[in-house]
Image 1: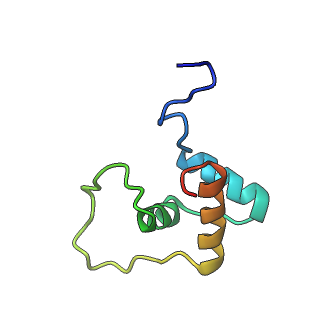
Image 2 (image 1 turned 180 degrees about the vertical axis):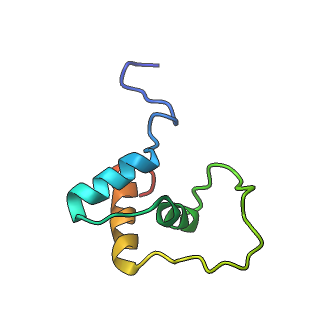
Image 3 (image 1 turned 120 degrees about the horizontal axis):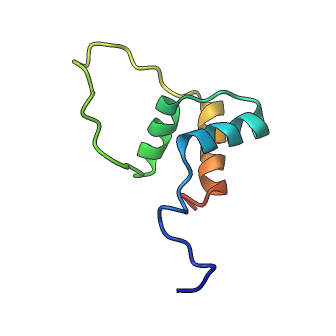
Length: 81
């Protein structure tokens, strides 16, 4: 393994890094919920969520503008192609 090789953990961006990228590039605030929704669309599921509630609450959905900004961030961090 060379010095330039990175592990799969190193190639993943944190939610905070994605939020900062979107804020700096698009001046938009995106929540962890919105990031998780977009990641789930692309099959990026890190772990199972056991805190799902009863399913009675209305869950806000990510807007088209924020969705595109998050997708750009995921591409930037090479999490999707």
